[in-house]
Length: 308
Image (cartoon, rainbow, N blue to C red):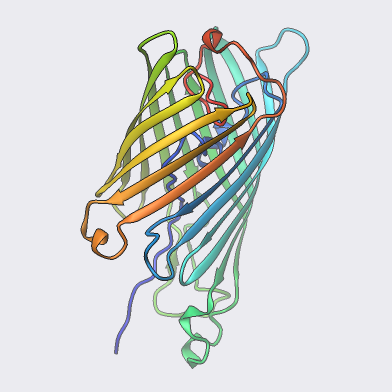
């Protein structure tokens, strides 16, 4: 008899975390109080040369409400959609979000947010439905309500964030109680990130960051990166992800409202013999409430409009 384990990525580890900050941590949504609307879209193609390679994408939008008079709290409401198509499963995540940003002191913000919604896991036809063992394996699994909790602290030069996933559904049976081997696992996942801004010149800023995907049942994934942003319009940087991936990022902002980022990753481990490269492209749009003086910003870089 032959068998093989199948694993899903309980959280999608995008390389450009600053672009998808609100998708990884709901507390990052609507951080800039003067930007009323934000939209972001991204696609990721890991192990591009591999047949049946995974395809991942997301769409995020939010609206920020700021009281007209003097205030210490503003609110953000949004939606987040994420899909992940692997060779065996298709996963949808449909979330609504709410975030409260609390101004503690000048340039110090505490953000608390959450996602709530549906996670749907749909088996793909690759497993072979003609096998009687898999006869009931094509039924989708709906996890509802599913949710994410997040917290973020932001200051003039640094930020720290943490979010918690899969806090409720820790285990479940395979697809509508049709048991196939051991029970499937949906373990807890913690995402945490930290960044620090280093001003080199009036027009040049360096952002160093570290993030970790902490899984309950497997070793963590760590990301280390450094990006330089010039004139608040262009960004370039390098990063390294464990256990062995080196990547480069290029970002740019156009017309004060539209921005994009591209990433190329190369595997340094044994995977390079099969599919060494991964690609990622992300877009952002902020049509209202822009601040046009980049040198008066007291915040570390915040895509998709590359605010410092």
